[in-house]
Image (cartoon, rainbow, N blue to C red; front, side, top):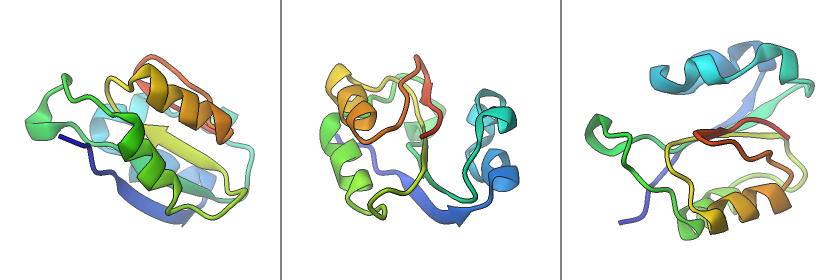
Length: 102
C-alpha cells in the first residue's frame, strides 16, 4: 500500500520542526535550513509503526505536488532505494530515516 504524505507549502525554516510529525522533529536541524521557505512532505507511519515503507510511486506523486525548484524537507520511515533516488534527483538529501533538505 502506498504511503500518502501530509504536504505543507511555504513553511518558514523556523516552523519546519513543528510542522513534521513529533516522531521526526529531532531529525530536522534548523542550522541546515538555509532557504526562506520549504515544502514539507511528511510520510507518516501507519498506525504508529516504523515498518511503514515509502515507495517511489508515493514520492513521485508527492514531488509532483511541489513547485518546481522549491526547497523540500521530506521525512518518513523506510524509504526504498528507488524513493531515495527520486528525492536525490529532486535535490532532497537522503538519510536513513528522513530526507532532510534541499
